[in-house]
Length: 74
Image 1 (tube, helix red, strand yellow):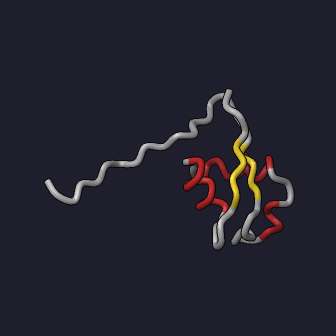
Image 2 (cartoon, rainbow, N blue to C red):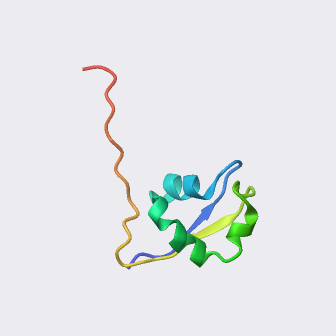
């Protein structure tokens, strides 16, 4: 089982962008993250700078993402 992660919002971050960029999680994980962070919804669409967001640990969560390889030249 993976440990819970602490993410810190940068200026202009929205929750979905933050969890995608830092943890590789998609929109299907928003409810789980919001349930683990009571009151986070009251922050508004754009999170205040420095807001700490907890990503709860789960046994089946995949926290790594693979980015496609982009080649500019052959």
